Image (tube, rainbow, N blue to C red; front, side):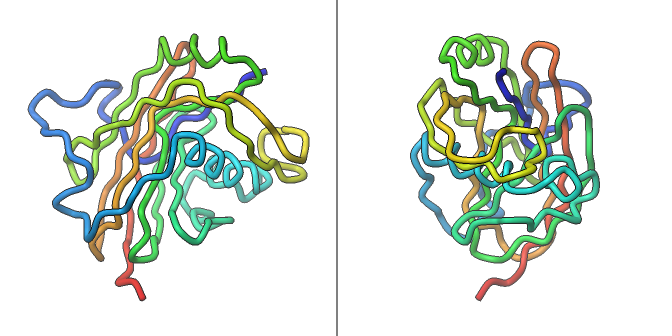
Length: 205
């Protein structure tokens, strides 16, 4: 059965999956401190799914309504954000300085390429950072290998998984220290999600 999530990186644009027409797309400027090279489509999704399936429901960042578990199981070289299992959330999250941020507006993994193709045909999403539109990266089906922990939040069997993954993704270079608002919204078919993140970015090392 395909699994789908929508990123919680703040695409909450009053139910509109598209970006406001007056806004100018941005890859993170002018609030980014430096450039950060994005990983490959497969590597990005494999790392994110491993992260998303590392925690049980009670402390899972995707199920978290407030952001108190934002730092759960984060890798060292990127900071992941997440959507919800459906519906809306507002989260406050402290992010270490110097970390690039990655999140999907909407995404899915499945054993079947056809599931991803159908999902992407209907997928829409948007993301804004401090009111500026973030350009989303469309990732069509690509094979990934990821790890699911015991008692993970979606009931996936534990162990190494090989699947097809796809979605609409954002990769943000490290943000300048201070407060930022990231909004994410996405949908595909009957599934939709939206999240607003209040990010507090540290000064870094």
